[in-house]
Image (cartoon, rainbow, N blue to C red; front, side):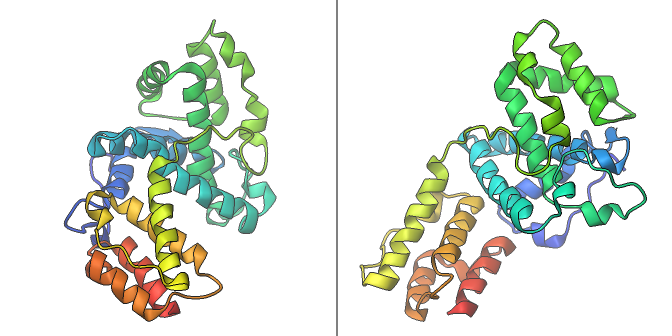
Length: 275
């Protein structure tokens, strides 16, 4: 149903902190339901576009343009892990060759994040206002229809006819090439840096006896910034868990164990179990 979205109750954290997932599912009303990939080989047209639109929506909700890049940083990390450690090479291209196999066997973050990266590359190439206008034309043109990646390519070239920058696009590499995207557009790191710097500070508290922070820097943070902080702590403490006293001091300041956000609570519990 293109006008009805089903979400798990765990997304209803009470503070809109998991609104990005809700935004993603609502965005599917346009990119997925109204305009649909012709076969599962072209699944990225659903999820790549929806991830792009989700991040555009969240920029408006957060009223912070940097949030678009910040969210994409975590997505790129997930894409790298998936391609390097999880999927077979033939399942890392945007356009798949599933045949009679189960589409679930090829399902991964590739469609989401490699697809998003391709769209971001195109947006940066032609300019944001022009690309957003293209998106509206894309939805209007293919409304109520299915399409393939080749249909998308042809429509893009037609829409930007006369724009010499379009000649730079290596369509075959992007659509059919395996592995990481051929181009990784730069992403603003400032929001992620704040999370990672705070994680480094707490590692120093734990390892070097530094005095713990007394000011709660997280009061103005979004939930993804907090999960970024916790993820950075996970990476930094893989070989040696945090001391229980450090976790207690952290919880006394940030009240992580009381969070209604399942993503935050899950990550904090992982740290606690390891300790």
